[in-house]
Amino acid sequence: MSDSIKVWDAPLRLFHGALVLAVGAAMVTGWLGGNLMVWHGRLGLSILGLLAFRLLWGVLGSTYARWSRILAAPLGLGDYLRGRWRQAGHNPLGALSVLALLGLLLFQTLSGLAANDEIAFQGPLYRLVESDTSVWLTGLHRQAKWLLLGLIGLHLLAILYYGLVRRRPLVRAMIGGRSPRAYPEQREATGGAPWALAVALAGAVLLVWVVQSTEGWLAPPPAPAAPAALDW
Image (cartoon, rainbow, N blue to C red; front, top):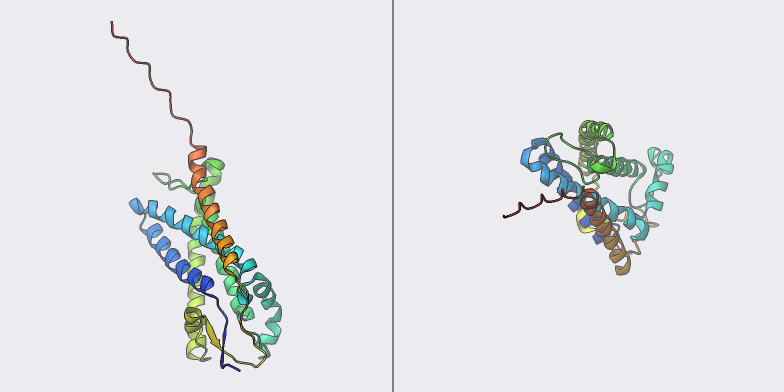
């Protein structure tokens, strides 16, 4: 029996790395504002695509990427606190952290789609809501960034704690996909076939295309051209 097991599949690891980069860049561009708001909007759409992929991959992906495992993990919180947690993948606290982060990122993305900066930037779904609703969502979007920063900070502290105190290489496992086998009953991840990856990617791309195209579909028609002056 191998001393390590495959826990995180390659698509999930690539998603994680891309999400870290996209969220970091979106926070910087949103903070600086100005001409960078165009890029902030583009990054928001990329995050929407990544989240859509993750939602689909939680159904189609390998064992420890599935929502059935993540949503069930918090039910074992009592066993975890008593030191009786023996499963691979996310532990109960890790699962709660993942759900909180992804849920908040989803809220930030959806609220940003209908937000505006009252100067030059409007989200692609701005015309689907009333002006007052857009202002309200914009305010929530701006305030929620502090909660997002707090959750990211807690996430990083947890990684440091497990790496330095518990001696569990979470970062190495996420990069390489394999984790030390802590208990004999822990099994390698299975599933996540190529066809499933193709479906998840296609679904994510389709959603981003629809959202991005909605702005053009909702745009008012161009004003009719003024009649040409008669040349007598």
